[in-house]
Length: 264
Image (tube, rainbow, N blue to C red; front, side):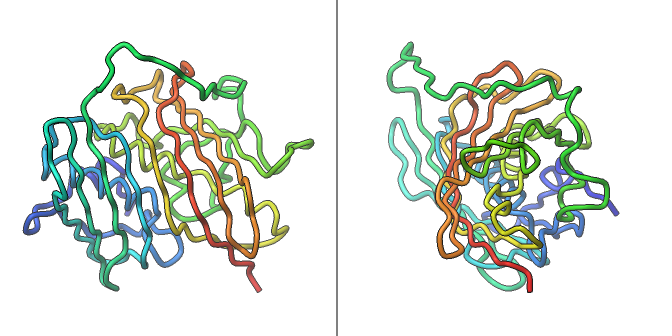
């Protein structure tokens, strides 16, 4: 049975001071939950259970172990002041601790100051781009998204492994805006996989995210996602991931550390 992103987030149920859910099969990535879904559950739990007075500004997720079976997210306030709130959230599955996250909520400090140094890449409209995920191909969770490739493995002349796609939720607009956005932002396969030249798998170790706007919406629900593998050595990839709305406004800027495994 297919369970949509909004059904997963909307179906989170109270469990102690946190929220819990049973992991649907269509959100698996190998033997664990898709990392973007784990992050979305963490963020949604913090928003609902802590009700922070300030918007989310930054988050860091350490993917400690596999997230499977029954998932329980528990938030803890680390410090709360007049203008900021620091929180920790642990996501625990059947195998134990899966994700340890730190979230930072903060009020505006210098209203009116506005500098954007993250311009979007030039891209054709999503309706003119071919699907990125072929039907039945890719990880299981990929079927939950509609992704259209702008640049990728078939593009020649790339200076470094890079991938740019338009992406949106496959089941319609995301009701759980900010949390749902974390699920979209991790959906593009790492461009570092292009270097292995054959079947491979990847595991995210750490994901650090800066939230650049409070306006979580995009025209026709399309978002432009670009990831670059900046350094890959000894099976460890350092990459940047950026997300813009359809009108070119920067929404998220993030970095990931990934471990790559060539299939034997």
